[in-house]
Image 1: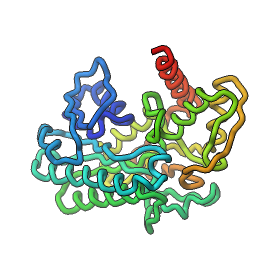
Image 2: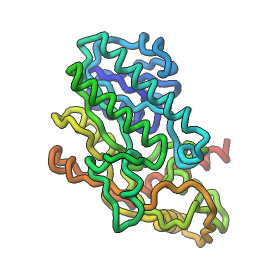
Image 3: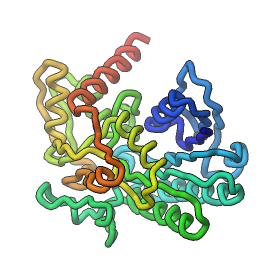
Length: 319
C-alpha cells in the first residue's frame, strides 16, 4: 500500500513510518521537520501543513493517510495558557486543509486522525476513585485545556466528513505515549521523558510539579503503533481509546527512575502545570471490537526509555 504520514517527523510519526515500511508499504512523510532515519527510503515533503500549498506537493493516490500533525507539547507547553490560540488555530487549520485537499481526489478515502485523552471531561478525572474515560463520556464536554477542545472539535470535523462525503475516517485517542526517540528537553517534552531526563541530570534533588500524587497510564510507542494500524484498518467508525490501564503516580514514576540510577534523591514539590488529577484509558471498546491489548510491560518500557535518554545525554556531553 501507499501511505502518507502527516507529522511523520515527530515521535509517533517516525516510529509509525518505520513499521509501515517494514510491512512493505511505500511511505511518504509530510512535516516541517523530522527525525532522520539514516537508512530510510521514505519520500519526504517538507513544509508547513497550515499552508494549503504544502498539500499540493503530495501525491494524490494514497491508500492510507495518517494525520498525526499538530501544534502540541508537554504540560509546560499546553497548560501555561500562553499557547492556547496558537495550538487551536494551527492544529485546526491542518485538519481543515487535509479534508479540503482530500475532497478533490476520490481515490484517497481513508484517514486516521490522532486525537487525545485530553478530550475527556475534567470533572470525571478529579479523583482516582472517580475516573470515567469511556469514549462516550467525552460528552457533555469540558476538557481541561484548549488543546483538548481542539482535538474534540477536530474529531467532529472528521466524523462530519465521513457522514457527508463517504470518507472513511478512523479516530484514536492517544493516552500518554512514551518510548525511545521522544523529545526529552524543552517545553514540548512529555512527562516520562522529561522526568527521566531530570533524574539523570539531577544530583541530590529533583523538582516535581504539584504533589506528585497525580496518576496516569503510559503507553509504549510499539503498542501505540500496533493499535494505530489496527484502528486504521478496522471497520469501527467511532473514536477509540489507545492507551494502557495500568495506573501509576508521578511519584512512583520518579522513584522507578531513581532506582535505575541506583542513588538517593530528594523530591522537591514546586508549583507548576499538572493537568487533571487522575486519568486512565478505558479499553473496553478497543478490547471488544479489535481484540487489542498493550503488550510492553511498563517497567521494561520505562527502563528502555531511561537508558536511551541517558545515552543521548552522554553523547551531548562528549560532543
